[in-house]
Image (tube, rainbow over all chains, first blue to last red; front, side):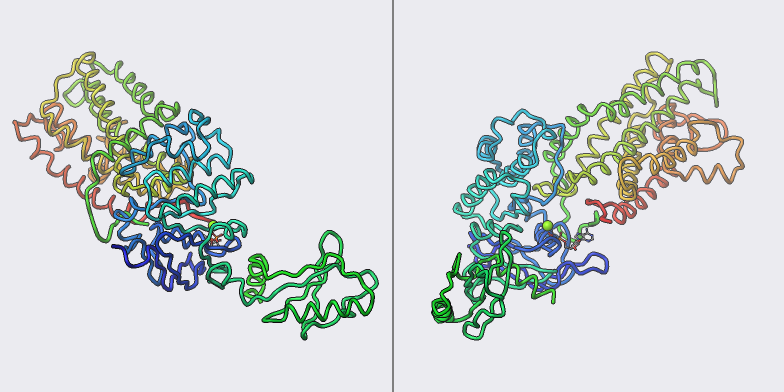
Length: 309
Length: 275
Ligand SMILES: Nc1ncnc2c1ncn2[C@@H]1O[C@H](COP(=O)(O)OP(=O)(O)O)[C@@H](O)[C@H]1O
Ligand SMILES: [Mg+2]
């Protein structure tokens, strides 16, 4: 029985020349879990994934996939994992069906071609040369090849980049099914919605470090609640009241100024009460009044900003 | 990112090697310009032999002497040039990286390419031998085993050199720049393109250390059953005498295999360098 997590990363550092792309990160992915690495371009997501795939040894720290060193023992690890690179080349002269057929030859116990070509939405493109596929179709062929060997651990590097919304949703369904069947998945993305939809747990990476990690609920917790409304025409921001000691910030949305408070702890109810009393007293209508907990997007943006300061 | 494998050395599986070779051959068949390098160039060189028929050089028929030289140096087209071009193109278009994400081992991916190249070389060499025998008055090789050993040694040396040189070649357009100098040095130095008698002895001796030279020596000795390693008249060798005469050539080949292995481990890369 597998007792240790299928993916373990401890104190990983990775450098290119003098540049430290991954600066000491640690996380585990448990069996049957989908873990997302979320981050802006250059955060170090691909470098982390490719280290786990065994493309290069760790500069410092240790990585384990299925209990093995994925670089040193890659011959044993590779047959048990599936890889969807952020960018990998295809043989443009082969058709979709030929590509799958050749790849089946490189895979122990491969799935039937129909089992992967159909769900990838490529059944009617099977006899088309790969060079004639659209970017999104290539991405789906990529995913089909990664699934060919019934991997125990699946690495997906920006799986839906370049897809239209419909294809993206179809891909999410495939990935969700794979996870439901028990596969452990590590995925990178810069689409917040993708992480929110798919991830059991996630880490927000920025400049080679993990700034925050946990379930979406955990990551968002402690980032306060938001109260916002359109700034009434006859008021300046400075004239708005402080709610529980918090002053309003201003954002622009659709050409109109929007006042936003970020209240922490139990401040939402008291803050709203104070705000409504203030508005009542001045006979102001608060257009678009809105109270909600912090979203992953709020956290993502404030993490990037906070880390840059 | 080296060829060196710190632990778990296992030989490549035969079935995976064959599958990689099948992929290579499929792609070759669809790529007409690569197909020309493999099939067209040897034809061109073979045609050049015809006018030399009946003109003796070094005590044998000129067409046959030249033809056995071609037998050796086709390894430069079929193996060296072909692999440098192929590996460089595949590294840059990231297909090498994709192949490396499959269950195939590194040695199976690279070995499959070498197998394809070796098969193409074997086809060329076989066709040339038939041509020499059927149309140019040649004979059946005096020592076929020695001939095979020489060709095999050439494949090994030039495959390893191809790994090393492809690592230094930034893209397939630049391959001509890295391949041609080595190609001409090898061909010229082996005395295939023009005789080297006019050079000072020390220079001749030095040129025999180039990687193609021992292949030519072995191939000619094996084909004619005469010693083409020693200077002077090419005396006949007995049944096993060819191997003895070629001992020095095999030593040079072995040295190149060691050097090639080291350079390949040092220079070969699976992924493009980033700016
Ligand atoms: N092969 C490489 N050589 C040099 N720098 C690299 C290389 N690959 C990535 N980098 C740099 O390392 C950083 C992290 O890159 P990457 O892991 O691709 O991030 P992400 O996938 O999060 O966008 C970036 O600044 C990138 O420019
Ligand atoms: Mg990336």
